[in-house]
Image 1 (cartoon, rainbow, N blue to C red):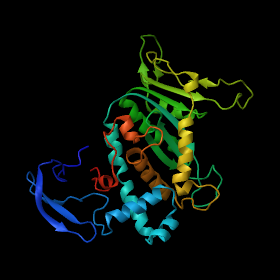
Image 2: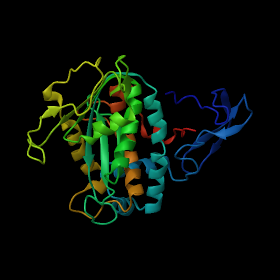
Image 3: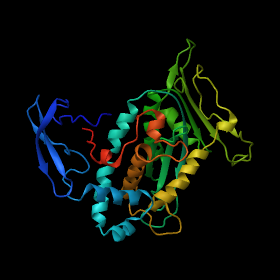
Image 4: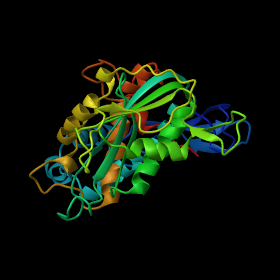
Length: 335
């Protein structure tokens, strides 16, 4: 990802040069660029999160950092003397970069990935029963790098799981060897099997067999020793059929979701909507998803993980160095 080249928004080529410079009130000097191919002029902040903003960039970064460290919306507005609407607008602009960075991440090829899946719950709008709440959040995290592939919220139903695992199906296409590990949730494997599977034709009469794609494994760790009917249950198992050419090399000690459970604890510290015993929960599902998108971006590309000592995107091989706040806020949205 080259930030030194300003691509033309019309022809998407980098054949541009500096035309003039102008002085802004709070952002210093800005550049007007000229494209030699299509002969148009555009600002270097065109289609970026800070396009049209008059607030100094340093102040925006300070406030967004406070929000990313667990400060609630009302507390941020009181402490930094800023309007809540402005903070929401800045977060909405920043969260709009998620499709761009997700697309950039899915371009890369990966040799091996171990992904842990789990759910996180919070209140939305009112104190409703968990079955009626829209605050269920699905987390799909790569174990070695701590990279978050999916962080999506909604009601705990079929549609929520399908949306999360459709993203995982795209990751499977870019990965040679992938293992999905869950803690007692069979629905992950069943829905993934419906979304992506291979049909194996062995020449025998009858309907061809369906199996997971080659190199994909699904393992669950059952929490209870028995089923609801009192039958004994296997502690570690594969709930769906796998490809016969897939190597079954997942030891029982590795079938857990401990890393994503630790991430859930971190989420409750850094996202005010997941606090317990407070009334700072999200007012709507859309607002909750906005904070999750900002958290996804900061966690993967900006914040250094305390265990790996690098940014998850760098550990996974997507980037060479982590992105700074000015780089993110001046990044252009995907067309």
